[in-house]
Amino acid sequence: MGRASELKLQGFIRQKEKRYYSVRLKTAVGNVTSEQMAKVSEMAARYGRGYASLTARMNIEIPWVEREGLDEIRREAEDVGLVVGGMGATVRPITACKGTVCDHGLADTQGLGRRLDEEFFGRKLPAKLKMGIAGCPNDCTKAELNDIGFICQSVPVVDASLCVECNRCVSDCDSLSFGDDGRITLDRSTCSNCGHCIQVCPSQAITAGETGYAVSLGGRFGRAKRVGQRVGPLQSPDEVVVFTKAVIDYMEENARPKERLGEMIDRIGINELLRDVLKNSR
Image 1 (cartoon, helix red, strand yellow):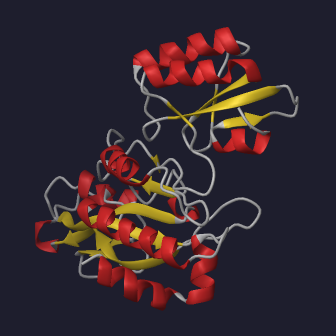
Image 2 (cartoon, rainbow, N blue to C red):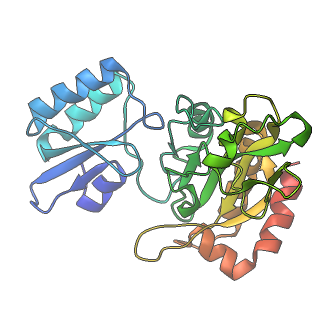
């Protein structure tokens, strides 16, 4: 099976208690089927101590597995479509909020997450790369603390002539108010483009204009936290996939060993990176 450091890269993480390992199971952007859940329960009972844990990146760990059971637990997990792994200097498992079904969600975050996962997960790079997707500016996944973050936004368009002065939007959002002339106005300097005013307006005085993903680059969490830098206009899901490929290709070619995306940006400069990335994502 190899040394502990080699096992960790395979998804077998040695615990404080040296004879035991936690087995990292990658999910499909946080989703598991009922069959997979049943298998996780079964494996936790047979190889561990009867429970599993959820990781910060929406994956599953079965702790208290002895070394002798690692090969077998991998085989059983793969039989139901679960991947053991997601570690090392690779594209890590993608996280996505439940925007697909959430009342606040502005986009199919799960669908985009699966596309990115299928296209890029596990690709080897000079350093690990994490991606997070949020379906609205509430940013439940902390997307801007990922190397590449995507936050869906919907830009409201106001037609004051259609306003019936029901006050639903004004009572819900400080960016909206009635001016001295009695007409509804929007302060775009404070608007987060969350789209909620669009949802509550009964007269279509507020409708959705441009909707897409705001992109940030270079974020990270951990001991050296960093908020990603917003780049470019809002992107459609198709544009997100093409843009992500261009960023990953650039990182593969230009990053130094163990240099995260944000560190590479500090060294090269965001304008230098974007010039090549945008050229290759058109």
